[in-house]
Length: 61
Image (cartoon, rainbow, N blue to C red):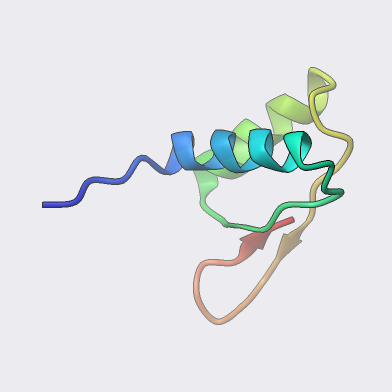
């Protein structure tokens, strides 16, 4: 059985993008991820974020 942790996945994707000097990261969106990203922006860890609607769950950029 495979278990995934969407919160850890979000944090690791952001960390890897910073280490690779990427300007943006795309992750599948959810309510909890949006709230975490809002906190990261408020605390100054990220510059900005955008939610892109699609036919499924949306994408955080």
